[in-house]
Length: 489
Ligand code: NBP
Image 1 (spheres, rainbow, N blue to C red):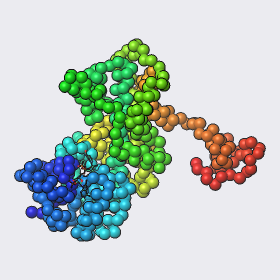
Image 2 (cartoon, rainbow, N blue to C red):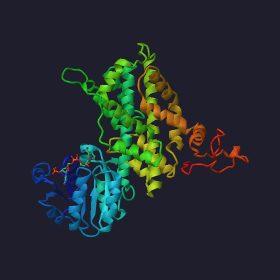
Image 3 (cartoon, rainbow, N blue to C red):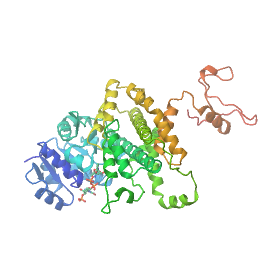
Image 4 (cartoon, rainbow, N blue to C red):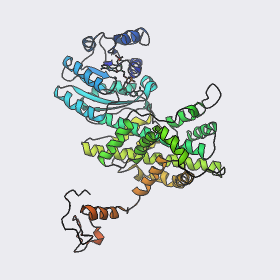
């Protein structure tokens, strides 16, 4: 029996994706470096399904229909390169290698180029949704050699999650674009999680809410504009008790881990000069949380305001304001994420499909939410939308949410509760809507100390301040008239 496609890597993601594909009528060939895992899988989970095994890479390749479709779901990094090097000599021109791991997009750019030289079509696909998603419908974000898409489209769209009947899987773009979009997805996930944690902290420390009460608030929010997987699991986590009847979450060490995809997004945003502040703050918030011992020391010597018992006067209003703060901040985060994707498309020369990206995130993945349906709609209405905030739906939503957003942050700031993500979202919003920012003074400072030059406002142009020219002024009367050659606008 020859297989429709082959998958290497029988850990949690690989096994579940194979079972998912078999459920959709595809014959899959399974292979793993450690042979015992193949044998165990075939004798147990895969038994009776359209799944065959292979005993070696050569055996594996020989069992695939042409063009061969080989999916790798192994640990990202060196294992992917090692496997590609082993497989390539066994493949023919037009065969397809799909990397479904969490690879960094520059690696996928490189693999795409290298495999092109061998006539092999490379697809780097973001896969999101964890174990459950892989088994019953992940969000899939494939990019790379577009000639591969007609050969894998049916398999990918069959096994992916569906949102309102549409598959959460579309072709993303060339080279490493699929893994790029997955990276931004993960960055947004960091932001969403941090925002939820700040809302919980404010309710707990300012409002004096119990975990059960906070769970009820999240349950209510999950029926409105914040309806999402992350709000839903937060509701459930907060009402989960340990064996002693006390909330388990309060026993968990408050130091956050990270695997690096949020950091990649933040670094890329800095590289591309895009103010993706919310993801940046979400990464830094995890870094700050990791300084547990220093925080313990600081908590004893660095004073802040006491939270009075009546800090929250009207509990319902407080919760409603917080809901607005969370909603508005989330809109900012997604607006920033799409700004980054737009800039990446321009910088890397990729044509990306924004409505499809929003649709791919709509179901199956960790950031799935009702909210993403509105983003899909916005980009379908206006494919070249400059910024999500210029779409009427989101502009109206932020305008409406503004009062509660500002009140929540003001209250938290007054009583010393940290809100890095909420606050940076609001600062971004206020900066973005400011026709004039204090960068005029900054440019003057740069010219004063470093002769970095400045440009003049068109309406202020004069003989000594010509428009569209880099100007250097001798501010002190002591310096020369030579300007720096390192001017950057
Ligand atoms: P892991 O990331 O834990 O990788 C384990 C697999 O990699 C095993 O099959 C292992 O084979 C194989 N492997 C390693 Br390690 N080194 C290898 C090498 N040099 N040559 C061949 N195979 C090698 O598995 P996972 O959690 O299923 O994740 C798979 C990919 O999907 C990763 O890139 C991950 O980041 C990504 N991802 C995971 C999730 C999730 O929720 N877990 C979600 C989304 C994406 P062995 O059995 O012989 O050791």
